[in-house]
Amino acid sequence: MESRSFTVSLSKNPVVKMDVIPGHFSTKHYHTTHYLDLSSLKNNVKVARDVAAELALPYLTSKLVDTIVCIEGTEVIGAYLAKELLQEGTSVINAGRDIYVLTPTVNINRKLVFQTNTQELVYNKNIILLVSLMARGVTVNSVLECLAYYGGRVVGISTLFNSLPESHKYGNRTLFKNIEVHSLFTDKDIPGYKISSPSECEACKEGRGLDAIVLEDGYIKI
Picture: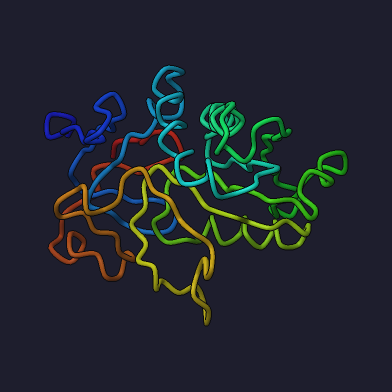
């Protein structure tokens, strides 16, 4: 399986890259044609710093930011993103401010919550949501609902990989309406990339077995 892998790099910064393995994979929510290894982007400090510099560009001169909320292991990038947004410069509007980096926790009912001592960093604050991957929008939608509950204002979503069209719907409403989404990579960078429900999966219909089950930071071969 790994012998089929290839690398996708950011054209303006080849240091920022992800390994991609074609195949037949299952996640908690869908089946997909490719496994995306985003671990180096999140865990390699030098690479995470470059990732943050790219993700900061849309916000530097246009968005006041109080808090960066990180999910799916993006905390290292989040810290560097805060540093980028706080850099000195006449056109950098967050220079001299304080920016906090937070991660929600999961309570006993498996709901996302913020601890009492951090809720004040969400209420009435301008927030960037930093996420690893956006494929079906289920996880991001739950975080947006959590932030809305605590009174946060999301000024942008930054993601390492995005395959959602702008018109994607969750239930009866359009996801991320009026919220800018900034992506490092998209499905257009991976020829043939598809996600589908198990009942609509072409590989399943062809009788092909799964290669692996995808977890948050890896996979288990079958």
